[in-house]
Image 1 (cartoon, one colour):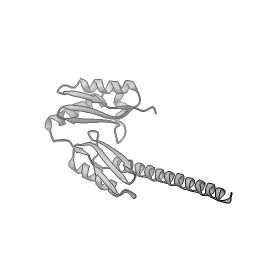
Image 2 (cartoon, helix red, strand yellow):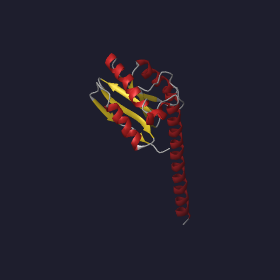
Image 3 (cartoon, helix red, strand yellow):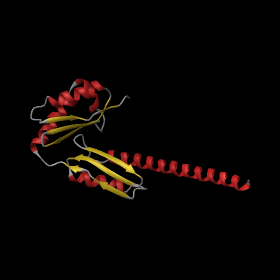
Image 4 (cartoon, helix red, strand yellow):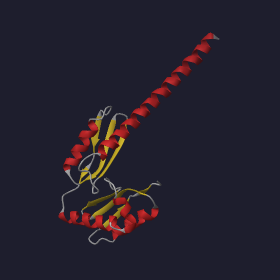
Length: 176
C-alpha cells in the first residue's frame, strides 16, 4: 500500500517537473523569439526592399528571407549570435543579385504602392510593413496589412507597374 502511494506521489512529482521544464523551455524560446525580432528590426540598413524571417527551435535560430546588401546578411547573423541562449545560427538569407533594372522596378513599385491614397498609411513609421522584393523582374510582396482590400490593392498596384514579369502577393491580413 505504501509502495503504491509512494509511486503515485513520485509519478506526480516527475510529471510536474516535466511540465515546468517544458514551460521554462517555452519561456526561453519566447524570450529568444522576442529578442531576435527586436535585433533584426533594429538593423540600421534594413529597408522596405529587404525581407527577413526567422525560426527558433530550442537554441538554434534559422534566418531566411532576401536582402539587397550582403552586409545585411552578415549583420543579421552577427546580432542574432549575440543573443543570450542562442547557440547556433543557420543563416539561409538570400542576397539578391545587383541589377539596375531591378533597382528601377523597386523605386517604381514603391511609388505605385506607397503613393496610392488608401495605402499611404503604411508609409508612416520607420519600418514599412509592406516589403517589396524584386529578383530578376519578379516581384514578391511580403509583410502585413490591415484588410483584404489593402492586400488586393497592393497586388493590383504592383501588377500595374510596367516591366514586371510576375507578382506574388504573400501579404498577410492582421486585424489591428
